[in-house]
Length: 292
Image (cartoon, rainbow, N blue to C red; front, side, top):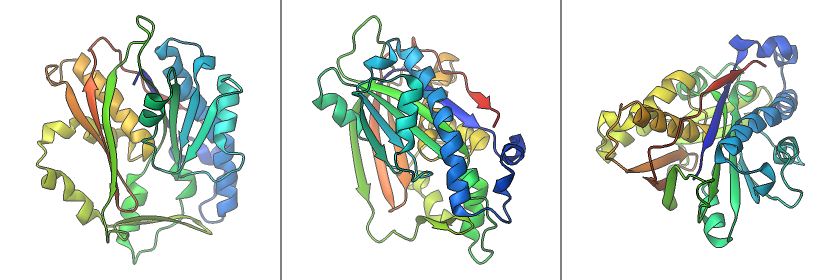
């Protein structure tokens, strides 16, 4: 896994309503919201991906695969086609679109010699989920307060070509499992007025204790959550940025080379990737805001 870019978007406070007055929470329909996502998401994703490609060190046309993951868009052709055009990727780049889950790049890299996979994640939940939550479902209120907007990208490949390619993390293993009988824990459903969230916070908050994690092990995750909210897929990329930043600034023990990247989602599904730090020479990506 090489350098990665992360970018969060300004929400309503940053002027989204001024640019798109049709997003009036009292009147906006789901088709209206999806149309706004289709307009603003490609350039935001391309901006994060361009940073990742620049820091990777090779031309954009050397990207062989683009894996794009988002639960915020249903357009066909998908947003990945527009992103590939904005980045100037090769016409032969292989495109894969996913909803929420995106731990496929490791398999592609290991089974395709010379493959270089651009993995891009995007979520613009403030557009889709801005309707007034149902007071009878307090979990939905918590979800609206918790979720945020962001885009992120990483470049993944096997057998790095040094010195141009300087890997940051080795993706040692990846796995996914669904906990039976937990469909009620996390659910997202489209409605006429936006996205409706169903979440059981009590069950989710028990996970750190069940795993026996020390508070310091979650410092990067807690910081990203407090500053940007839960951006679904892009959150993991923001956390990776913060881990690199903390290691560079001696906030964490550099002798610790191993870690787990864990994603939790609807299902209730758990994705786990074991990472090994390749070196401490990498520089974290500056986080940028974009005015919409």
